[in-house]
Image: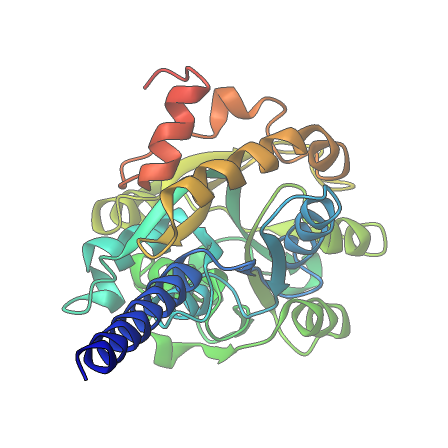
Length: 325
């Protein structure tokens, strides 16, 4: 009887140990998945194409985890994908990321405090484009016009609202169309909209192609409107679209810009983040050759000008690379 009791106790102990080990492994599996999901963007935009190529490079290096790029509308939508746990990484404009993490503007009272920055990818510029025949030359001329502002959930649409506000143009005094990148450019080409807002890299390839066919006009963001915009939304910075960025563009154009950030959440294991950044940097030269708007040397740009919390793994990687603050 005593032997039987000892046998039962031993079996119970083994079962409990097995269950405990299984639970531990499952928790670890949730944190250290074999695949990371990257929320990129629209296929015809930089977020989508850069994300797709980054995934292809990383998935071909024989290391784990694999990277899966999932398309989307853009920065605002990507914040939600991260917050909902449907993505591990995302490309997000720095003005949108700041508002989400701090809890301002559309995120007032609902801050996404678990978002963490891995680094800066490249600079982005707000571009408001029309054709010369529309007569639109300044922000005030947009009043009463039909405007394409990007897809719903995009950073372009987010910025357009703030810029119109700074220019003193209520949304009910313009006709807004939320169009994805491909449809936005098509609408401008066909004349079904008077102007388009795009926040993107320079040059924006679709505008470059259009400018070879017809005379495009860039609408400046300057003067009091620019000052009011930066006072209300200080994550913007003043910038200039240089002359010659587009065919037949003979003069520079004042505008505002921000950065495209690589963002994660506190669910991403620090060692994974550290390793992931090492892999990204190892392919940086290949990415830069195809996307020249990426800075040539990530060591000089990736951690520059950040005023948002870095993920612990990114902090460690920064130390590994001996990048000064």
